[in-house]
Amino acid sequence: MDHKATIRAIREINGVPSDFIPLHAPVFRGNELKYVSESIQSTFVSSVGKFVDEVEKWVARETHTSKAVAMVNGTAALHISLLLAGVQRDEEVLTQALTFVATANTIHYLHAHPVFLDVDRDTLGLSPSAVESFLEEFGERRGTDVYNKSTGRRIAAILPMHTFGFMVHMDEMLRVSEKWGIPLVEDAAEAYGCEYKGKPAGTMGVVGAYSFNGNKVITSGGGGILVSKNEEMATHAKYITTTAKVPHPWEYVHDETGFNALLLAQMEVCDDLIKEKQLLFERYAEYFSKVGIQLLSPPETTTRWNYWLMAIQTENRAERDALLKATNEAGVMTRPIWKLMSELPMYKDCQTDSLTNSVFLEDRIVNIPSRVKG
Image (cartoon, rainbow, N blue to C red):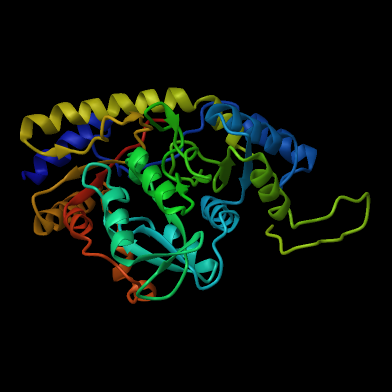
């Protein structure tokens, strides 16, 4: 790979001849200042208020779910999602090794144990065949529950993550979930605005979670949202994330353990931002196809993509590392895909399968600048 030519092309495509190019950056061009000022003046700047209500209604409407619940960040939304799905201490969750660390951390927060399985190369997300193979080998039915024969622990949930907004093969994953009677929770942190065969990301399992961190397509600085078609479940999520306070005019009575607004303006321009990011992707595709470099795109079953982070696939790890060094030294921010969770010190003893595809992708994937201009 000609690194200098690649750097020149990225600079030209992004319209930045010499300055630093970040990987991603928030864009504020709508009613952000107006709404934030109004929120501050109202004094409702925490977990309740007009704008929180409006965001929750907006997301529920856009995702065709019964209810959406706003939270402090995507990690919190995923944590509560697993809790609502019934994951308890010393149980197991089947998830992918190739993911952002928050996926594994939320399992750990519940004192449960992640089991790291392989991904599919086309989706970069949890492979239904890997989940099924694991369950065929290690799954043991005991009444209505499934236990891991090698550990004796109950397998409480299946947790796929839609990497870069590429949708996991959800039909197959849901079939495995239903066959074994194990709830499916969607980590859709990177997939707000994406669809699988016309169905919004995060809405196909029992519950799903989005992130609106500062590096996402739209952001509230932090922020996350939980969605579910089960209104009772989502209502309970709202209850426990507002400290489980029993309604009363003045008394503070809490009857279970509980957990303690910019986003609306971002949602108003979300479609425009996605269209602009699509144009950036198309310019990248034109260049990389000419020089024989693989620009990753989601499978056809991802019928709508948010173009969050764009990525190329290098020939091997050495080429990946050389590209990372050259671009970052030249002021063009790139990054490798995540280190496998099973390689991190806190998760090194967790059960895994062969992780063949995960290792292959870890050695080759590089994210390139994916932001649009403010």
